[in-house]
Image 1 (cartoon, rainbow, N blue to C red):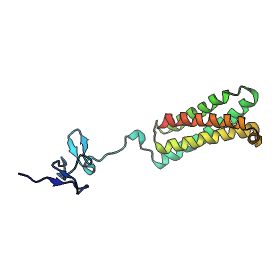
Image 2 (image 1 turned 120 degrees about the vertical axis):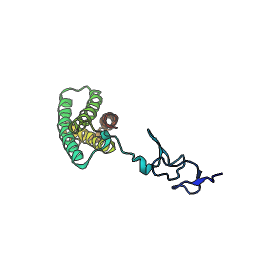
Image 3 (image 1 turned 45 degrees about the vertical axis):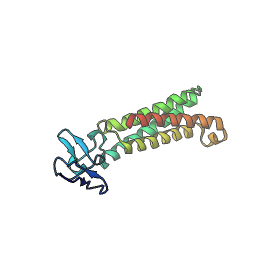
Image 4 (image 1 turned 90 degrees about the horizontal axis):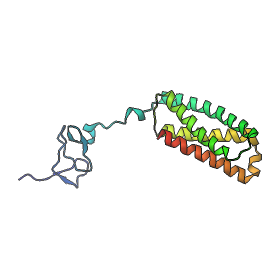
Length: 167
C-alpha cells in the first residue's frame, strides 16, 4: 500500500494528488483545474485575460486622454452650471463625468479594463469635479456647506459610474 505524499507547498498536508505535468504532489488548496487535468500553479501558468493586461505605455495614453477629457468636461460642467440653476443636474453631470472619462480611457486602449485604470479614472473624475466647482464658485464654495455636499455627492456618483465601467 502506498503511503500518502506531502504537498510541495504545504508540508503538513497529506495528499495522493499529483500534478498532471510535473508529477509534483499537490493538495486541493494548490491544485488548479485545467482542461487536461489537475496541475500545480507553476505548470498551469495562470495569466490574466488580455482585457485586463495594461502595460505602462497604454496606461500613460489612457491617463493622458482621461486627463484631457476630465479638464474639458469639468470646465463645461462648470460653465453650464452657471447658466442652468437646476441643482440636481449636478448629479447627472457627475455621472456623465464618470461615464465619459472611463469610456474615453477604455476606448483609446482597445477596451481594456483593470484596477490601475479604475484608480486613475476615479482620480480624474474627482479632478473634473474640482474643475467644475472652481469654474463656478472659485473658493466661495467652502462657505456654502449644503452646496459643497451636493457637489461632493455628484463627484461620488461619478466615481461610482467610472468604477463600474472599468472594473
